[in-house]
Image 1: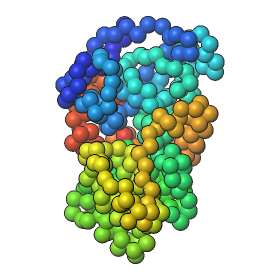
Image 2: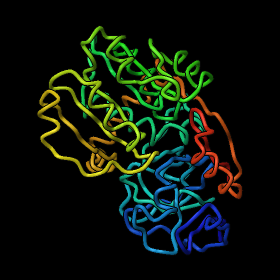
Image 3: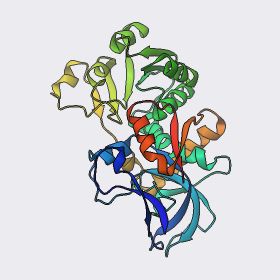
Image 4: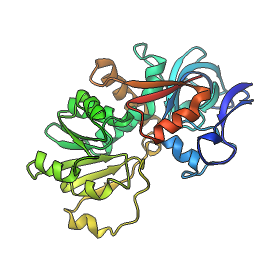
Amino acid sequence: MTKAIRMHRTGGPEVLELEDVNIGDPGPGQIKIRHRAIGLNFIEVYFRKGMYPAELPFIPGNEGAGDVIAVGKGVKGFREGDRVGYAATPGSYSEERLIAAQMVVKLPEAIGYDTAAAMMLKGLTAQYLLRRTYRVKEGDTILVHAAAGGVGLLLCQWGKALGATVIGTVGSEAKGNLAKKAGAKHIINYSTENFAERVAEITKGRKCNVVYDGVGKATFAGSLDCLRPLGMFASYGSASGQIEAFNINLLSAKGSLFATRPTLFHYIAQREDLEKMARELFKVVVSGDVNIRIGKRYRLEDVGEAHRALEARETTGAAILLP
């Protein structure tokens, strides 16, 4: 038996219950991991509320790091004792778990368990946003919403390392200081300023090549006004609510814009893509171009408190659970 957080219904943080579960032995193609640290992400709030469907009872959680403690038949490349990390595979809110080996990567010695758990989902998300959804290049101007959040801080750091001018939006002066330290050249406090107007001022009317938006409904309309012709709007989250249906001709009217809602799962569906993305992520972290900031550590049994903090936007950087 192992301890895990399970949901038997959707709702508020109170539906996250600590239980004893029997996960069994790994089947063909699977490995068994004992978690050392577990990532905490806003997507788990969506699952908890039922915005993303899941078969109940359900163990939430989408990233983690730990040790391989058993290997199923047919698994190659992994053995007991390997240090590993993974993302985009529900079921991480647990002391131990089974997982398909093809979704797991080995961790470099230079990256600890806490760092890995804090960076796999957010870091791979930043990788595909910056290198694949829109390939940022030197001289680009990029707008990062929620720039002091887990993904936001990575986008600021990595974007700066790529030679882009980073504009970050935040909700407080303290968060602005974090984003500035992470590499945002310009900070906009959207609680006191009109961010679209400020972007136009900062860029002298040229606006941005790409907007990375994890906020959603509250920032969508203004974000389109921050883009130059042929610019890209990349939505990777909906912390303020889902973006509502809109007339697609709006994109034409505002400069033949592109708009996309990518998800990590599709970018890592092929094993070779996952390995390549992870190598690039590990490289920028080990080199120091990207620093993984862990804002808060919670015990696994305190996950309800962690969810409340996430929804209240009280967290900065990454937060992790310790089993």
